[in-house]
Image (cartoon, rainbow, N blue to C red; front, side, top):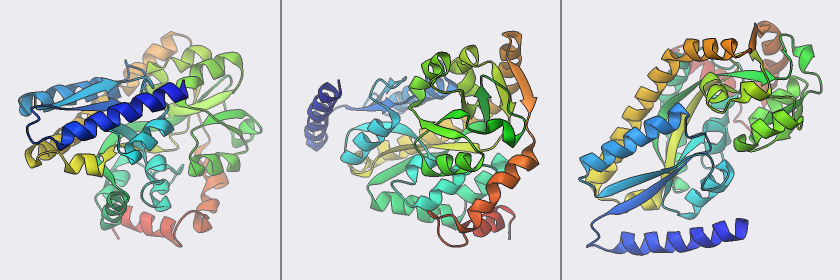
Length: 329
């Protein structure tokens, strides 16, 4: 399957490059690859963006949506983008750190931020602009970095209100160093899996727990396989929409402008709609039998925060610098 996918990618990339080089080309088609289920709000909004881009460019720029890992795993798609494929994709800050600076990973570090407002202050800072510029030097263009995914919580076969409850729990994590290191500090036994595999992994006992925002837990129906949610709110998750910068640069200036504007506007809608529906999604999961419990947040923080003062992947003093930025100092 991997060989087939790579061959198809090579062919499509070559065709895209040839078409992109044609000055007489009437239409450009870009694909959007995501790992989330088709019903996830993320994909609903991305389809709206695609429709608006098509309308505003009079059909000259077409975005085709491929949800649910149809273009490959998240890591596969990110690498395809890096290699020059005509693909847009959703990127977690932890993954974006691979194409910018590892300091970006602090956006995915548990318990660093108290609210999404704090995250927004950081993203509007000169420090974040430096991160985006570094991404562009590595040929990655971030079209928007304002898609608020929501607070991440723990879902599992059991409830985990105390840190001690997580001891040696087989815990699914994305293959992002800051996720793995911080959850190791909480005592779990990490298991890295692509998100599309999490439902079956929970169902079959390959893992006992996972984590994610309410909207994602609901859309992927993870609560059916593991009907217990511990409210930790450990990460205020922000996502970006990225593509290859060389591919972006080949677009006409008016299409570049429209693409950026609509992706950023889509991020604003996604953030608001996602926040507005959290209570309703929780009610639906509770009706289906899911149990919720509030975590001992101070206990969780005490286990994780000390590692940030001299975290191996970050610039010296990064945690303190970020906290000063979000505090307006």
